[in-house]
Length: 316
Figure 1 (cartoon, rainbow, N blue to C red):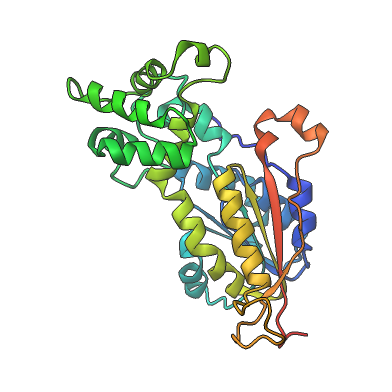
Figure 2 (cartoon, one colour):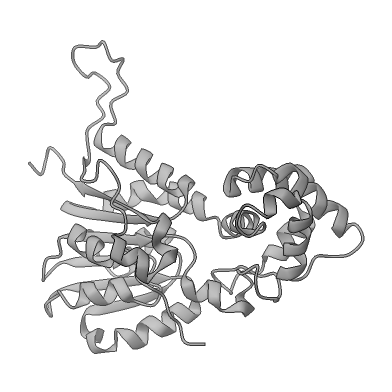
């Protein structure tokens, strides 16, 4: 199957990066290379684009898509949490912009064999990086009922998390859960019929939760945003597209703290904690897809773009 991924909020992200022709930029979630291509088109021969992705299929697709810009691109298979180490190996100290397009790609969802979809029967995989050993099957067959309840409640925000976890544990006592449709059927059976009739696919939230847990998506995001701000040059920008309320909450909180890190009591006349602002949040409210984009790609409906610009006292 050809790697296809619709680049969500493409124009808004490119405008948000405020690209300089001779700048250095990082696409930390390269995917099919849509955002990266638009960046490359705006770079001179002196500019650089570093693309990072942990999915081998994405690396292959993006390499082909960006082949006309080989002189200004470096493509690395890895996780964006390792951005500092990757840039160090490339002898790059600071960059002018970073973009992240979080979550699962259209290709990963549509390629049934990858095990992300609850609509196609396949091995229960869900690995974004197929070099990893642990799969979604390992999670549903080894986690305790309490642990399954926690991830489905917290990462899937499913009000039937307790009953879903109970049904998974009961089923696996008789047989190991191996496939996507097997798990989907278990989850469906844990949700009342009256609720199933009124809402979307009953397995959607649980599959999302298991995927997030397996790929450490929120952990990686939480641990990396501050590091990315550190790597920005003065005036450099970090653009993050999220699709999940928990992702957006992390981005919003990290950006807000970077802008105003002071922990002094509000009644203190002068800041005495010594924490300095690292920049400003350019999006007081997130940028959302246009009506045109929503018509072209329904999967963009939950997308939110937030932008942070590095500004320090030393740079002013």
